[in-house]
Image 1 (cartoon, helix red, strand yellow):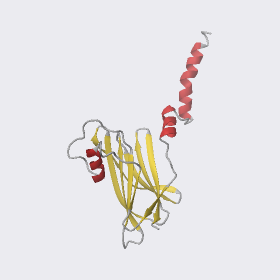
Image 2 (cartoon, rainbow, N blue to C red):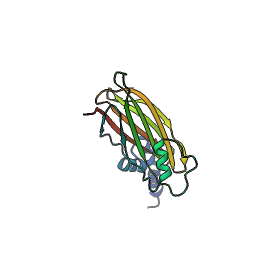
Image 3 (cartoon, rainbow, N blue to C red):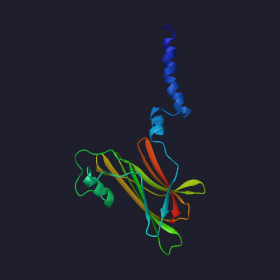
Image 4 (cartoon, rainbow, N blue to C red):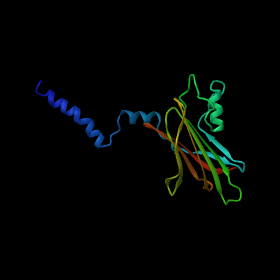
Length: 182
């Protein structure tokens, strides 16, 4: 029994190394895939001439008045947020047609996260995501990190735009299919 003990220890030490080499997901990756996995079922967004907005959630303005006002304005609060803060994951995409441009739309995306993130705006082109623009977030407080990007894009009916937020071991995406307003 005791002679087998070093072999057991050696195997126990080697198994994690094998899983790393074979790219078997670890506990953190499995947790991410189960609870934060990327949902690639596109949301349809009808875009009239005055534009449209996709939002993944909202801030309760009655409880977090200053945070909600800052999110709406897309600007850092004039003085630091204090007190109890929510751990919010929000994504928003504003789409506005650029009149007289032959189908271009102006895309503005913003994100709020509980820790530093990278916000990327992508478009599905020829079946593959193409990066349109990206940025890193800025801290509004210890629990609120904000990022915003904007770009003009030559869209057509059915264009698929992806708002991706990546931080630490998590990534979240919103897939939005742009459709003309009926």
